[in-house]
Image (tube, rainbow, N blue to C red):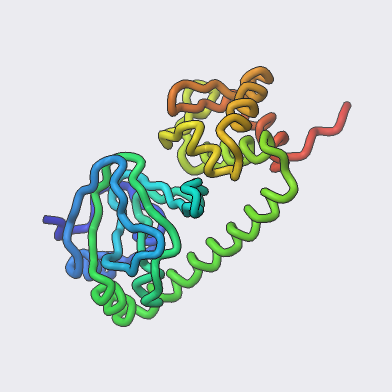
Length: 235
């Protein structure tokens, strides 16, 4: 049973807590493991639990009536699942599915709200995180309206490399296991369009792709294609 501060390297919400706040949170929850491909929460359901991720990663998605998936983001160690629904008592706004095995701490919505009531500072931290998510959502809406598929794919790969990249002899391997279909869902594109974009990026020598694995060979060039970096002036 988890009774001490998690040993994993944490980011996100859990990384902002003091040792005393962490101990209090751990005391209010119980450990639980989820296998790869498990659904943690489902869009439209009322929150039954708040989940703090200790190890492993998940994707956050929304599904259209015809079953098409749009990936909204990914969460990893230190992040929370279901916290807003617990606070607002509203249905969950997205579906969360594990990309790999997860070790978590699970709290009831009432226990999580009681934790926030006990620690007003943590409530302010949570509000700041929600604000950043809203700004990121606004940025993505602009991106989808102004960039072609290849540009959107390039931007998402740069972001994934920043958050989930592992340096390997001058290149960066994205450690998040994503299929082309999932990358399509993350860029509001078809799988065929994403496949074409990846072929083009490979032909430029900027990326290398394997099954559920992408390595960035030229981060600067990919960043320029994504519109994140300016071309250097000619000398």
